[in-house]
Length: 82
Image (cartoon, rainbow, N blue to C red; front, top):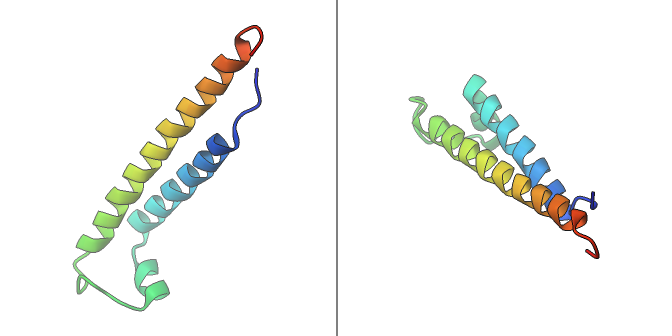
């Protein structure tokens, strides 16, 4: 099997980071106000849930892309003369 490309590893790290931030935001959205010092939705949580949705979408997109890179590397390494 060929070595896994750097791009796949970067996408794996981005997947884990996005998923962790989505989970953190879903469990405790107060971290956003604590870090940035603002409450853009006046406490109703709409912005936090939008952030959870965007981070989840990003995690899925990164995971799909990493899987594609990983499979491409595995396929390229199995061909003779590759």
